[in-house]
Image (tube, rainbow, N blue to C red; front, side, top):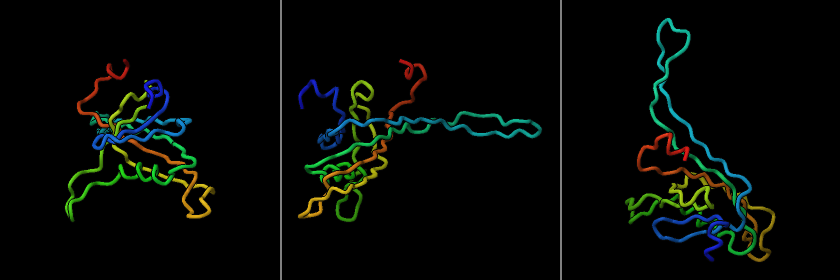
Length: 156
């Protein structure tokens, strides 16, 4: 990949294997969701509950990418593989691989786990082997954060 394209084409990198998958087309929209968990404390005789901060929930990043022609099935399978662990015989060897999301300055290498891969194959199928020639994949990623983040860091 040319260095000047790295900022304009989104892609995902498997942290373990270092393999990457470029988006054929950048998504038209991205949903970036974060919520916080509060414990509700009910005080007898009070008209409203009191709230105690418990923790933040995971930040979820959701978007759709489309693939047309070429190895559509292989690209979808690569994304789906990020949901599966590695086994050694009947024992779990490793959890599913983490991934880095690169999407310009918005996500400049955000460490994530892939939580969901939803695929829709469309009416374009190869006439000889019925392999898909068009797929739309909705990805849900959750950001991995190693230490607690202060509100001032978010505002930077």
